[in-house]
Amino acid sequence: MVRNGAPPGIGRFWTGFGASRPVPSRAGRAPGSAALESRWQRRARDRNHVKSLAANKYPLRKCSRADYIFPMQAVLLVDHGSRRAESNEQLFAIAELVRQRLPGSVLVGAGHMELAEPSIETALDELVRRGAMQIVVVPYLLAPGRHASTDIPNLAERAASKHPGLRVVTSECLGVDDVLADLVIRRARGTGLQP
Image 1 (cartoon, helix red, strand yellow):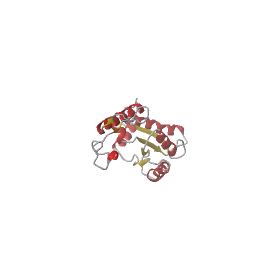
Image 2 (tube, one colour):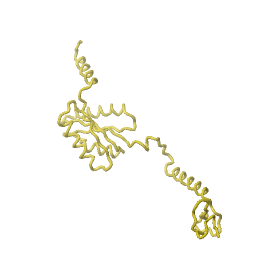
Image 3 (cartoon, helix red, strand yellow):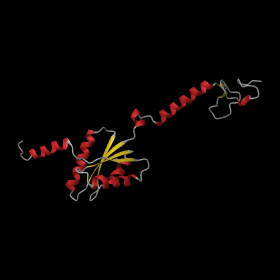
Image 4 (tube, helix red, strand yellow):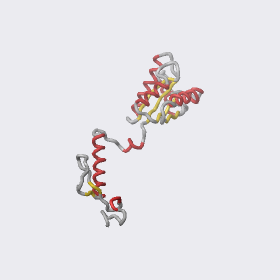
């Protein structure tokens, strides 16, 4: 005998194409002689169930495609650090200018290599707390000396080691650039230089 389209000898264990199964009752009890549900009806019901779960879990969240592709990024400016508060405040001033020029999805932080707070570790921890998963450390130094090429990258890697999954890279220092040459001329003209 063939049940629900099953080949002989298979009986009620047949789940192949066209097979049907009892529809679960809303009260959670065995349906007894309840109507049978087709394979396509099950698929439609499952799709609607998933959609309703998503709507209930994220009722106010509107995600863009970038939310699923790119993890949150951050830029961390690092200078040497000074015992003078005025010198340290300049780093945060430039960090704010950088933040204004970057998209709002990119976080910007600032820290000092030594002599002042926040340290590299403290600043990096704060960016991670705010959701950063990729951090670019930019040494706010002119020349590629030992601090820019060795000390700052090592301190950044050490700070990142306690955050599994965090990706940290250190860029080159400010170095030689046309923008810096223009800035030197502007500073010289500020003192009365007449070219």
